[in-house]
Image 1 (cartoon, rainbow over the protein chains, first blue to last red):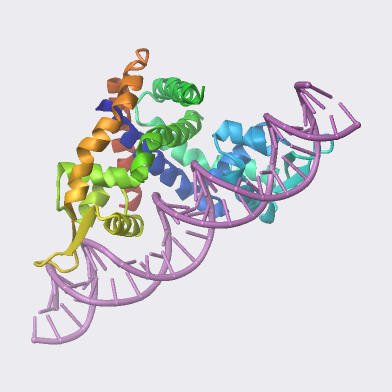
Image 2: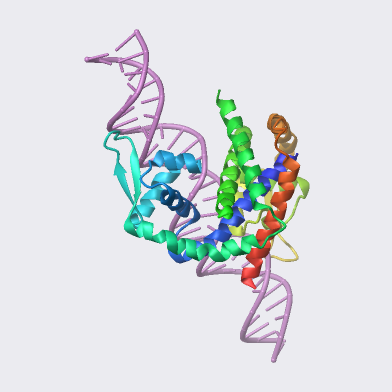
Length: 145
Length: 145
DNA sequence: TCATTTTAAATTGTATAAAACTTAAAACAA
DNA sequence: TTGTTTTAAGTTTTATACAATTTAAAATGA
């Protein structure tokens, strides 16, 4: 029953890690999922809700209200696609762009703390989790076929 | 910025893994957190809400409504402590106990699927995540001190 | 003892998650 | 073309998470 322990480990690690990061996001009034959306946009601005959903594995049911919240905070602007009116492009506002260096700065202490955990190989763990994610996704997809 | 990828990996893996398990819990009308509480009680019946919270790293704000739901489903009974009236003991009912072999049976196909992922060492991953969890907890505690 | 502090649950309010459904637009197919 | 299907967002409902507060009981201390 190893997978039982694994699911519980993932569940608990995920929540506690997010709580750790959340400590540093509070001063900006951002939640972790909101921060993730901004993080994605800082790398690639103007993408569709659908594309954000693919990167985070979330659908519009979760993302639409979250992105509307970011819009009310004036960090992003939502824009209907002209060529395809079903789509919505999410673009950073100036305040949204300006947030990046501030948050990066604020997160440096956390990065330093985590780098001191020498007995943990973050790179290896990342690789293992990436492989696991692909396996889970293939299992989910194979159930549909 | 490795920890960024790590937090996203944990977040996504956790949710998708739970969705995978959830597929097998639907026939019992149970959610994953509800199943986890029952899983804990199957190993140790009659423990306190507080103790369940320590094992799952959740507090009464989450657990109280969840356990009340399990009580409405007639899987557990909540009982005020006699010696210490602040506490609440959670005990399995007969239907709650009877559920264990049924769910164990229903989860076998998932276990088989996961065992076929030979390129993933579940045991190693478990160990790494356990170490990570301890590190995260120590970081959280050190912030409080 | 009795006031103070701590503790275990419960409550309240906000923000996800996710399934199921709706809507409008685009793609497709006979 | 036009009827059917698919797709992208949005809406609704239910169930967590979690911070902050409240309540009642237990533990502590001068």
